[in-house]
Amino acid sequence: MAIVLLFVQGKGFGTIDLNMRIGVFDPYLDDMGGGEKYMLTIAQCLSSDNEVVLFWDNQEDLKKATERFSVDLSKIRIAKNIFSPQFGLLKRLLETKKYDAIIIISDGSIPFVLSKKLFIHIQQPIPNAKSDFKTRIKIKRIRKVFCNSYFTKSFVDKDFGVESLVVYPPIVLKPKKEKKENIILHVGRFRVKNIAIGDYKKQGVMIKAFKSILKKGLQNWRFVLAVSIRDRDYEEFSKMKKETKGFPIEFLINKSNDELWDIYSRAKIYWHAAGFGEDLETHPEYAEHFGISTVEAMGAGAVPVVINAGGQKEIIEDGKNGLLWNTLSELQEKTLMLTREDKILEKMSKEAKKRANDFAGKRFCEEIKKIIEND
Image (cartoon, rainbow, N blue to C red; front, side, top):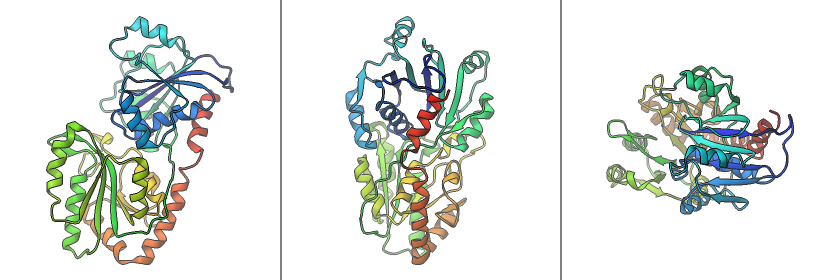
C-alpha cells in the first residue's frame, strides 16, 4: 500500500514561500511501482522552487528509479533515512523540526514529527483499516486527504470518515513514431502475493487467455509482457515463463521508461487484468487503483481491453476509447473483434490518444501545489 503524509509548517494562508525546506521519504523506492512514481514526481515538482531532500540510503535504487520513471532528481539532495530504526524518536523529532514540510509514503502508520500541517495522500484501499482511538486522534491533525482515483477515495472516505480529494497520478506521454505491429501488450510489475493467489497483476491469467485466443483462430499476433521483477520473485516468474514456450509470447524485463515507450508505440492493443478472480468487496486493494500503464499505452495509440474494475473504469469509456470486460470470454471475444475490424481499431486508437491527454501535461504539479498553497 502507499500513503503520502505531507506536513507543512506555518506558511501564511493561500501562499507558499520560495525555498521551503521539504523532506521526502518513501520506504518502497526499491519496489518502483506507481506509488513511487507519484512520490518522486511530487519531489520533482516541489524542487523547482524549494529545497527538497530525499531520505534514502541506497543510491543505486534512486538511479534505477530515475531510469524507470524518467524523473529529474538533479535538484534534490539525498540524505540519510531519518525514519529508519537506527534513528530514535527524539533524534527524528529534532531532525524533522528543521523542515518546513515533510512528505512520507507510509504503510498506514502516521509518524510523529514537529510540523504543524498534515496532508495525506492514499494510493489504494487499505486492508484492515483501523479506526481506533489513537488513529482518530492522528486523523484530527490532517488538513486534507487526497487520493489517486475515485475508486480509492470511495474506500478511504468510508474507512477514515474524511472527505478526500482526488489527484490523478502524473502522466508523461512520450509516444514515438513507430510503425504499429500486431502486438497485444501488457506492462506491469510481476509480484507474488502468495502461492495460493499467484501473481499480483494476473499475468498468468492473461497468458492462458492469449493461448485460448490462438486456438480460436488468432494468427500473426504476439503477446508481449513488459514486466519489472525483484530478485525474490524470479523463481515464480520462471515457472510462469516456462508455460509460454512454443507460443508467440515475449517478455521484456526491467526496461527503462524510454524502452517502454518503444513497445507502447508499436503495440495495437493493451491488456490489463489486475483484480480478476478476486473478491474485490473484501480485498479492493487487489484491483488496479488507477492504471498508469493503461493511460500511457492509450497515449501511444494502443487500444485498451482491460478488466471492468478499480480505477480502470474512470479512464475508459467502454466502446469509445477502449473496451472493458468482466469475464475471460469477453476479453477474448472483444480482442478478436479488434484484430479483425481495422476501422474500429483505428477509430478507438484515435479516441484513446485524446483521452490519455486528459491526464497529461502540467496538471499533476499544478494540482499538488494548489492543495499545499491554498490550505
